[in-house]
Length: 263
Ligand SMILES: [Zn+2]
Image (cartoon, rainbow, N blue to C red):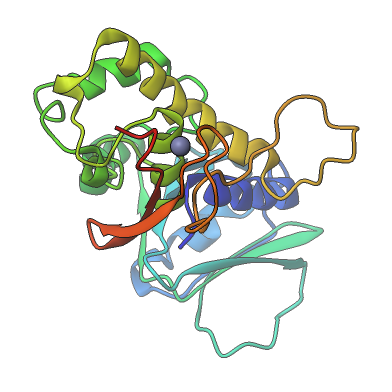
């Protein structure tokens, strides 16, 4: 299950392939989208915005393609004119002179005007995305302390896209280890200092993962690289305190933690 950093990097790849270039071919599988095909020829993709697992493809004529991949949807990048051999069902093709991006299998696809975008039910429900670089620690703290979220246990809260979009299971585990908290803690119980550490971790860890996960430390990279401290490390020693990392289940998902220093 991809989390925010992986989704954002996939969007970066799509952007790199076709952003800013005039569209030369546009094709939609769904009948209700057919009328947009000719409208989009010659227009450009200005930006690909991620909101949790939703992708917003913004066009230069102010229209936005909303797509949510659910469990099955997948984007592919190909050379213009190429059609990959696959058993997946093609739903969207957006092509420029050089490249095309193809969306397979997704069923949740809509074209929205700016007015429709502003009132879209999923987008109204989903919280701010941790990889939106304009989101600040102060805003995360305010959200943690808001009446809606202050009494929620972190184990469930950190998986709830209505709280913050882009967090998933490995980020939940690593954030709570970094902040030395348990999944049972709630914002309403925390001192100002602990809340501050948590809010920083909620932004720093996903952003470090986005920037460096999978990169090899070849001494050319200055600064920290993302790596797992507890995720999939049950039975190993905690690097902070030497305690033994344990695995359990929290909110129906595997949870890894150090009982010695997370309390
Ligand atoms: Zn520890």
